[in-house]
Image 1 (tube, rainbow, N blue to C red):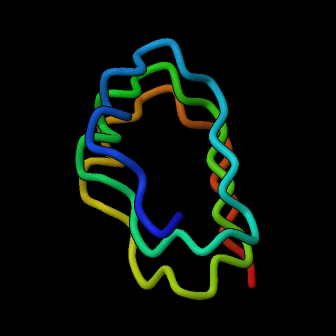
Image 2: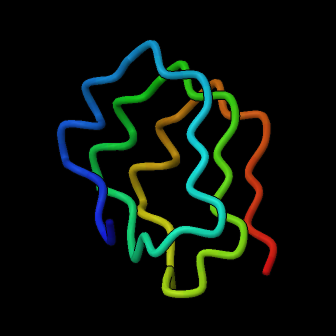
Length: 68
């Protein structure tokens, strides 16, 4: 899978999203709708070049892992 669906933003109770080591190229702009998201791991996603602006709306985000 190289893309996550835009409908991901509707997962308002999602607390953790792990894409580490995957082939995901980008996160949907709608990720800002995941207001309960506390941990996002995109470590070692070698094809990912940037994070969407919508990520700033994830007000509960405590950990952003993006090493590698």
